[in-house]
Image 1: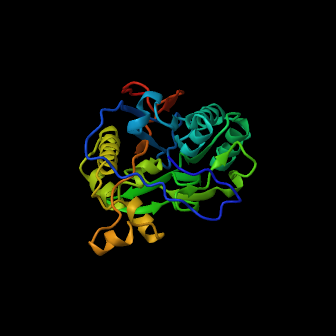
Image 2: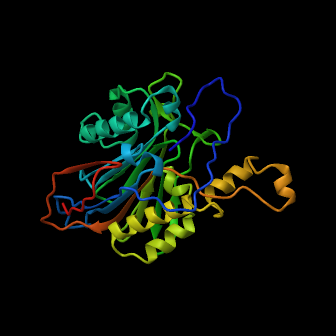
Image 3: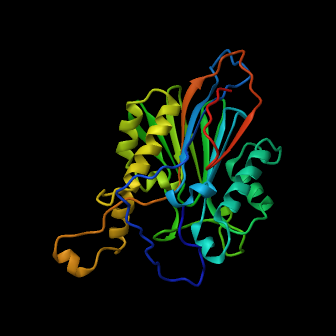
Length: 324
């Protein structure tokens, strides 16, 4: 959940830091498992696809509305995954921040197989954004796996993706920010960013590689080293996604945790008052937020496998588990 709506006239940032609470909240959670396989067989080189697990936990104060994150998973080609994070600042204008992110992902899901998209994540962002009529804005990331193992990624803002191979992180996206806590964002307003601002990346994956995609609710609260060590303890992608989401949730409510978010805040000059510094105090704590986690493992596609289903998920709906 990004806090700030980008406005060209804003020159200074304002810290919207909320200390984490020590008590735990009972929230609705959602998990799902999706194995995606290619329907064609290449006798020279095995085609690859994703086996994917997802888990999401809404912000404790937004459970009744299901949070403001949205995502979708598709079996097109080698597999497509995407996450959008609604910008919470729109609530100050009496606009539901979840409407934009959910419509954006619904449009992306329906357009993913469009011929004009041509299996290009940046074009998918362009067409999905153009088709979104809701007022609001959202950060977004899309990743598309080719059957030959090429992963194409396009992102606007601070949703992120990591690639882990044999216990080592070999790739990570870089967040885009105007200033602290105000990321680049696709918007209903002309002042926002577009697909032209997306960071486009390409990574060659091999069987056994693991990808982790998530909203900033994951990466603001969990360090990369923790992601790697958590994956090492869970061979099942759905259990891994659940473990990462729960870890992020626990950190977000720990007011003493030195989170990635609090470290970045201090590096940008946000800290406790001077008199507290004299007493040895400093800004700490996680960031309460919606948390969306997608974990995918690259697998060799069975020769006879054929799937033609697309799964669309949104934060806050009931628990499910499915093998497609």
